[in-house]
Length: 548
Figure 1 (cartoon, rainbow, N blue to C red):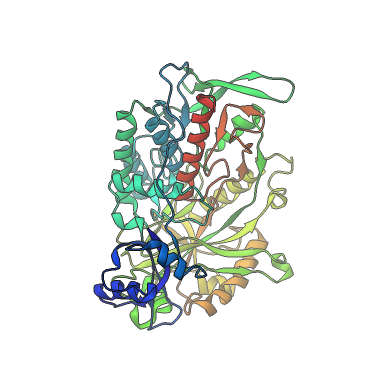
Figure 2 (figure 1 turned 45 degrees about the horizontal axis):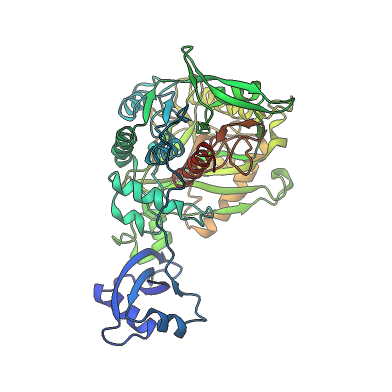
């Protein structure tokens, strides 16, 4: 099988045109093309009005060796990669302990699934509820202002990714094609098959709910055990010298002890109490950079026109997205401080994502159709541990959490202390005046948005950097700094504020048998990368358990 890449055709090409383009590109005679499948399809929208589709294809030809020889110097013609997943181990017939997985977000889900498929019968513990109960609790905040601290956007089956756009793309290096395994398992669980070949696949919240349930059933059918509302409060540790220790199990909030020598920690980026417990128990933790900012909303039609021009609305293009970056130059903003768009949700909504009482956090979400009126994205500013000092000068690796909590508490006050979020028109934000009411763009955040000034919602350097960036973004997307666009605050959970460092075997640097994984440990950022990390960690656990 050959892989042919970078084959361009017009947006409205006919089905037969693709086959003819393959024949022409590879100089194939009649009968030499045996078949082909689409490996990836993207689009090139740099020329508005002349948008092209770009294909990568797996092609079967009569004489593969001859074609490869003919195109030996062509980087776009080469043997197709082998993306089949191969298990690294199989559970032995006798074993003392079952592996434990803490957390059932994308990372924990795939760690548990792959361990179960290899016969290790994992025990998966999640502090939250099953996904449908969790969905009801989440809507209770959005509709009735009732927060459930252990069952919300952050905690529960499916993790934070369940209430998101369901994006399934990433920029991680993936030489072993673990991402393909993630996508194939999602298709088995009910995702549309197109996610295997569309360039930027997404699923949407409603589909994710049923898919997560299906994958849970698969794990259980293979002997895995999933226990909800089982918060891990402590670790059972055995000292090994002065600066090392080994995990022997976990202690649940109700006092129950579960013994295991292999524990996957996949708790997500908002398990702040778990991070504090790990630090207190001397598991090596360090502070890491992350970003803070606001959600911005525009009419989706403006983004579509700016990106696609007269071809906006074409069914193959769908709702347009964007990715923006600006490096602040003003000394007031900190030279080189990055401002960028994050977690862009075409045709979506801004959602309440707090997990702590008396705090407000935003996130973005879309359904599969992406047909809501507004586009939204986080506009965030990069910060590092030196920025944490005003919020916690102790030098603790948990200082970033103190910063997050301070900003989220401030947002709660600015919103009216009722879980409304504070908001401001972009035009008023740039002019330095408070907003009194909203205009053309109605904010989508539920339970509601209170207009006012966001100047005190973030540190001064972040406000200044965003003010500098918005006109630059407007030059890239006409209308991005439109007066009636809406900022909603605050976005503080772009990634984990800590990293739980691990060694080459993917175990904690100083706690043998503990496998930090996914977003919470600082090793992923999104559904796909978290799933890939879960697979990698499951493989490491399996190798250790069979002595490999």
